[in-house]
Image 1 (cartoon, rainbow, N blue to C red):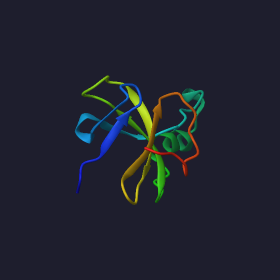
Image 2 (cartoon, rainbow, N blue to C red):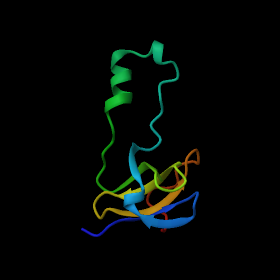
Image 3 (cartoon, rainbow, N blue to C red):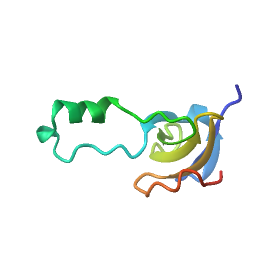
Length: 99
């Protein structure tokens, strides 16, 4: 399988995937008051993810570069990353985007 090339939105460079680490699904909101969360709400936050077939928002970290977390939109069928964007930015339309 060919290596992914991932564009870090902070360094603004496309680099091999070996420089990055996957950080899970992007835009997962922590419960506002963890102490008031029920066991079911806490389990939902910790363990349940959407795992879609197709376009999916993910967190990655550029560990051998700037060290920062960022988000990307990746097609889980083709393994192609179509868009990367900075952490804290709103999630773009997941069916759009260009490398």
